[in-house]
Length: 299
Image (cartoon, rainbow, N blue to C red; front, side):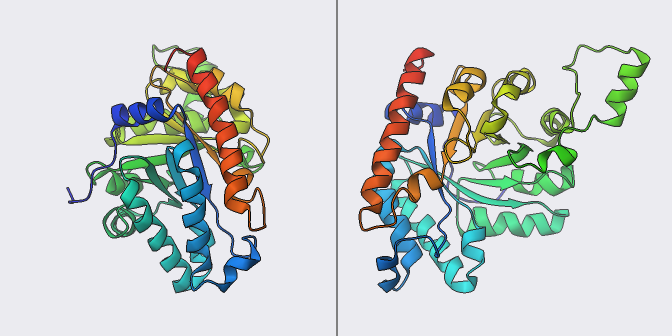
């Protein structure tokens, strides 16, 4: 195991949700071409944008999730903005959970280096990982004690139908032969990802799954396979996902969901009032989340 700062465990994350009456994750998809123009006068405009967004939304938010593409696309300057953002968030370590949305995943020795970059160098709490290459591409990330792997399972994009809904050949053969087992029926590839990842050393304290909000009707079946895990749910707001449906079908006894909103919060305004407007939209989401948590008797 590698020595890093421990992230919150599942119980601590649930306690934070209860304290803030929120399960909001703010996506810092901070496109330099979309941030307010007056910030470009700063030496590091993207970091300044992120800092003001964080300061304005902190009381309503339990997690922040920079999408690394918006930083890597700017070369070393962008990477510096990303490092500064995570460094700034460290002072709020007991108030927020940090996620690097990098969607890494490669052969074992490469995954190990990706894991070093984000868990050791940046010391983030969690990293999104693509499981397509299988067990040996994921386990290097699980070697870091106290860190979380967030596996892509069911995404919101139109291309999700190209692979994620395919029926695994073995399950199709079992159906054809009329074979029944006590395990949940695996009818789609994304369900196979959920079921198989249990064998890789992940558990409810170090593994989450990405499930798009625009697929909220699938959450009931997903909860049959992963009843206790946290789910990271993007797609509420600008992408059309329903917060009500996500809560209805996705919540478990410890809430079990982090709902991400990016554009709907950080780009609520492109003027000098951008942070104020971001806070207003975050507060509105938090108030709705508080009501849903009350409905489920979780607060």
